[in-house]
Length: 462
Image (tube, one colour):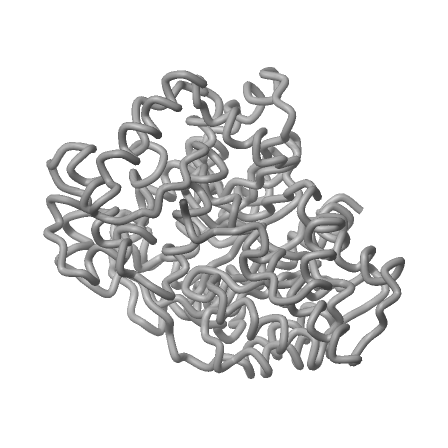
């Protein structure tokens, strides 16, 4: 039997009450993930546990690399079974790593398998889970619906095919799949292949020869996203940049269209302007902005060339751009164009700075208009979630918080919501048992349910 018990992470009786009575059965609103919408549409039965568990999950890949596993057993040509057995061997001694918890919970919740994950049990787990997959016709629809998910916000570039979302809606699933509008490939003007991305946008709109043309094209595409239900957008930058003039951004774009390589300064000018333009546009169309700050990407040039983007070679940046964030928010606010904004911070050293700057721009447009996004990526572990709650409550308001997300490419990531919910209930349960807050369950239960689900629904749909 696994070490995962009913009271897992629930450190006192009040925490158990809060989780089992109020948090556990709340639906899941996954307002930021990277699930492939075409896979959800095709809804094919998986062949084996590897396809669901390890294919495309760079969280697991990084853990294997940290153990010194040859890349052939991670993204290489070894068989699915060999890769799976290797992961089980590695995970068996990864005490304290969130994957040590998540993977065990995933096996229990989705496959009814309670064997401890280690080298000794790997073969038995492989056989048991694959038998379960064949017997129960495990598909993306099955995994999402069995997780009690109501909404999935995927992350889509401005030129992505939106017909997939129309076709998914026709399927009649019990959950909605809605694209979030992401302009990163149009913003990152220094990227290899930038003109190819620009060409994809042109093919869906019109010729782009100036910053005005680009702005118009982005607005055209946002309107198309809105037609299929879009309520959120996504911007990912290592740091926030100064907002230059439109003319400065135009000069950079024309330089690149003309075949010249942009300088570092050119890239910063362009990103600073496009960030400002997008957020202003999102405010106009009442689209919430999810701003991700602090990821230093593609550190390993050799592996980037070999495997491409999003394969596990990003890290936390130490860049401090809080002053520039303040100026960006103040400019948008002064123009009446500051959208609903969720700020995701990847560097925990910046928690207090970001929390306090957010408090300067709240308004009655929405409860918690400016949100401190949940612990994500390298921080969505037990320590990161606990610290997030402490920092959030120290200078913000827990009752307005929109709660957890998966930020994942894996269909098995929904137990992360329950991982967070257990930590949330222990946090509140401890305060109650220490006599530091009310024990009135009529009040506390509503806050728990709001943070687990209700606040996110209201934030994006009201």
